[in-house]
Length: 162
Image (tube, rainbow, N blue to C red; front, top):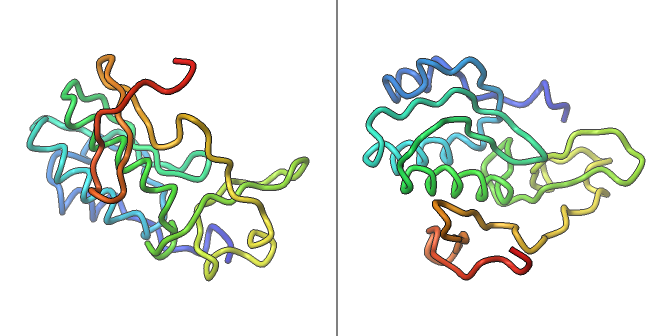
């Protein structure tokens, strides 16, 4: 499956579903499989930042990037949670997936796909290596990590070497 063939989230739909939040969005280009993550982000962030504005939704290094500038710590945690979870969810269908990175020397986009939606070649690609900071973020000097069991960002000790 080529990337241009996958269904994409439509900016107009986001604007209708979340008035005001996506009005300033200049760029929306991610697969429909991440729509629940985007909706959950807005539902979690908006109560903490009623003036929330998303400027872009894009894919980078195989995961979702939500470009917005919010001073509210809880909204920033909701953003981080959605971005972290996207590396575990197929961008095409929303089922469990993983980030597939091209082999060394191969020029190609990293993608988060389940086995069904990965191309034949992509199925042979290695998973992205999990590093010390995977699933972690810092907000106002406090470290948090994503906990899948509770589906929450929880305060944690600083990452090694930080």
